[in-house]
Length: 100
Image (spheres, rainbow, N blue to C red):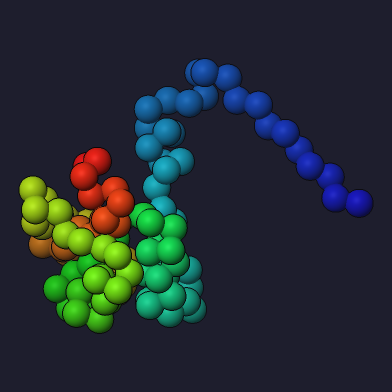
């Protein structure tokens, strides 16, 4: 029999920092292939950050992704190689591109 525990948190627990950390992606797990992690994010229609080396390896048109014209480069961790990049490309799904 599986026991489930319900943990109720009050409003003082959810500080702005904890809210941001709750939405943060843990990244690719150990031993996982880079392409699988990027494809999983694409299936969930989440934003993808890729470095210039990993960008040609991902077929953004086939997955329905496009770059944002007003955000040509972003700074952060590449979802493909997990390296930090200063000029990464932000790819968003076409259905969400007009909302951002």
